[in-house]
Length: 283
Image (cartoon, rainbow, N blue to C red; front, top):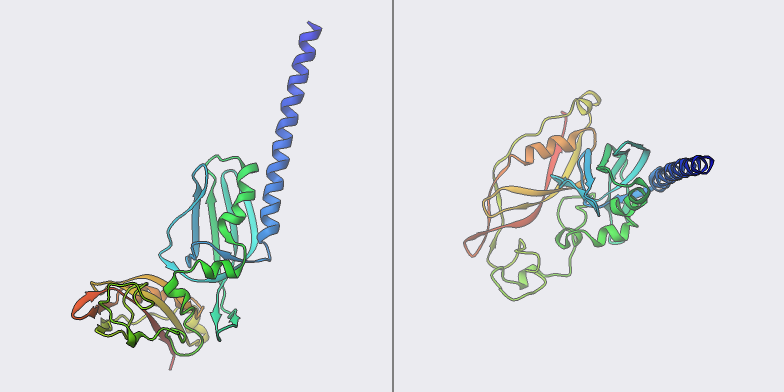
């Protein structure tokens, strides 16, 4: 009897120790995640420009909800909280700009965003340390390298007039109908190629001022990169230059309602990539 009781006590102590060990390890994972992102410059995988970024752990990897709008921005977390199966990271994002071939600047405009991950019962001791690399690139170079090639070539619209940066590609030397791989056609038709007619806006929508911008009498410009498909519909929208003050969201809502006469290649409608600027001015 005494022997069995002693064994039961030892089993109970072992279970309690295991529970304490798992708890401490989970706390260590949360602390490591917090240390890695709070007050640190990070670059979000997937390039989501949403104010609410969501994802879940599917048992082996992190799966993020596809964003409707994208941007290359720097994210600095202010807080990390883990409660039950939910991980919530809150912070600020700033859209990056390149004002020369080699210089990248961080504009003052900031947007509050929240990243929410549903762990779905996954072991926190395993998943939490992996979230760092699953959510963020190691550095800016890694983020830029993962941009779509057509956007990377012209990233971003810059601080002046909208449009791609200077390129070594001479679009006039290429024909949009050329089936052979070449620098012009590897990302699809390029405005300026032989046989190309650029898209034209046939219906636009005036964006609304945000209340914040109206109260402060703030004026600004928002620049976007986007695809116009062969039916003249805008999609795959990227914020290339942010204005802040809630104006980015209003501009996006307006652009989604634009209707284009699509670009054509020798008379045949084709999708094309272009930049658009939306101006907000209070007179």
